[in-house]
Length: 512
Ligand SMILES: Cc1cc2nc3c(=O)[nH]c(=O)nc-3n(C[C@H](O)[C@H](O)[C@H](O)COP(=O)(O)OP(=O)(O)OC[C@H]3O[C@@H](n4cnc5c(N)ncnc54)[C@H](O)[C@@H]3O)c2cc1C
Image 1: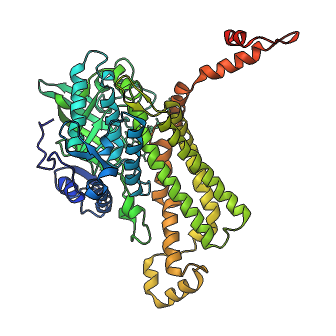
Image 2: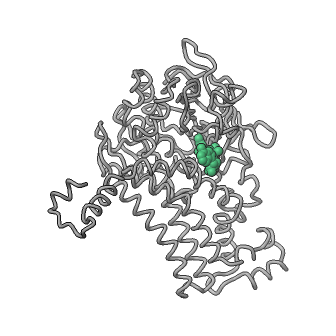
Image 3: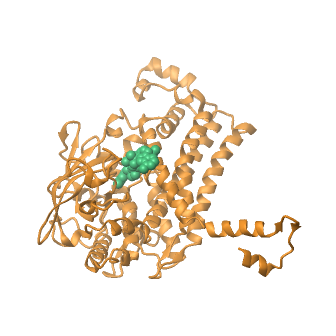
């Protein structure tokens, strides 16, 4: 993994936030925004605060004071590396990983989905069972993937992914889209690598990352071979074009008015690969529709990656329960049984979800290489629950808040006008919360529940792991129907037209 010019950003050591920012500053990445090419994502108003949030995560991971929580020793270099790359060889390792993932998620209160630990965990999955990538005879590509995983780990790199084709015409497979270079695929094969052309959605965080993985998670059909790839591309490569949606940070008139949007917009982008050259060493799946699918589901990658996502989600739920409780206390209704009932509904969701995360780790089992993989049935049950639970969660908090979200000053500037300030201080306060504090808190809560930033999060939690019907299909695949069928068979074996059959236990087992 040396055939690209990294401008000195990777030195084989963990990076501070400042080093991360220096790496992505003016590195040639092409981010398109508001009709222009962005000069520098670390200073542009649409992206600067998001970049700082990620920089904080690098600072936390590399701080020697956090070494036990956040790092372990690289098996190849012997240097400390972030636990987000740790391959877990025991339940204890999984718990240690979880501690680091949880600490990172707390930096954005669970609102950064594609922060550095997300796709890193998928690569932990790929490297934990490279046999899946080699299954059709391409050991060389599996070796490339493991080497890339080690490179990312030992250099503290940040990788995101685009693994869903753009939403153009879902009724046709990749190779029947017209023209043929709509979906990102191989347009040229060379001795030293391949050339990619086409688009892919949705590069969350890609405006900030060092690398982007281009692959496809949706099923492919015969004829789709050109699109059945997995590669990793430096984001600053020639031809990588990042078209960002509107930044909510850019739309926020102040941090006080939009404290979440202004600091925690991870951004989502349409990625266009415009004749991007990828050297062979960065190719992990090549023109193989079977392995392109298997890489996610036959090995541990999808379960591992979603275990990280669910760790983040638990942080978000805990945070939102805190918002709800504070709203009730602020309005002096927290002692009322119906209000406590609503908050208990939130606690039920949060505690159940946390229990599912605990259980998927406690029931983890080793794969063929001795790597401990979180329990699949529980992971997919949690994932299915998430997309339907999140809107209910928001709705309960909205119910608790009444019109309090709306009865707020138009902006922080209202405090500067003495007449307006007098009104705010008198009428927008609570017994235990003076006006400044109340307005600050309610603007925070609105940015989590009702703003455009909040609404994007409802889409994110519904779709980040695939459309809900796809997520349910994973649970259908992994649920233990054998035991359920056995119980039904036993129930039927216990009677006939004449009534109860007192079978000995052994006969009941035989009947099942
Ligand atoms: C905020 C956000 C961030 C994201 N970040 C990333 C990212 O970082 N990287 C990445 O790769 N992707 C990302 N995604 C994309 C995400 O993975 C996709 O949105 C998801 O896989 C669903 O695909 P789609 O949006 O194309 O929806 P579609 O596949 O077009 O489905 C939309 C709806 O159409 C219906 N439908 C479609 N096909 C069928 C069918 N065959 N049978 C029955 N019903 C069907 C269903 O009702 C479905 O919910 C992100 C998405 C969001 C919303």
